[in-house]
Length: 251
Image (cartoon, rainbow, N blue to C red):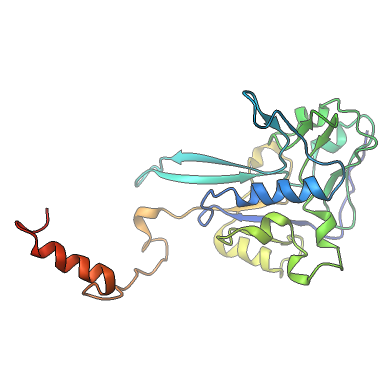
């Protein structure tokens, strides 16, 4: 069994803005692409174009319709991957020591050469963040793109996880959550970031920012948008006038 470090030098992790995420799955695709071509054994797919396709993913996006106690229902897109917990049960149950948490940055990884694919870590993880790669026979999980973030051969702007680099909505943020003055820590404080399932006692490093009620944006601190123009111009203006000239006008 692997022992967890009593403390880590840093707590590298993600902050995911549920108010901004549009559910486009760009993070899923970029994660799959990067980790298939670069880190460790490639993420495999089984019968991808057949009747019963399956595959290994390190990041997934789930969508839920949420009904607040007050206000209208809204659709929330919820990305989920390994949360790199401080008290990671996936590490302590591993019988071979393949799962471990790094002292230098708190990232939880799997040494694939020692993994026997027993699945105990997947059973222990309350977030369903680990998957067995059917082709490789080992457990796979988010690595925070450890092969990117320390790679000095990459431009500085690319030294972040692939999911963060590719998110078109800017909903994903990466940094040291152990540093109260870091950008991600300040963002969590400003927006009321929260842990996923804190009752599990795993102390996840990754945080989520809550969505704002879309039917009460002014109450949530969003200024109303001023109209660009009172009268439509260009093609829309022409179309508006053309419709007005039709017999009976517009319906």
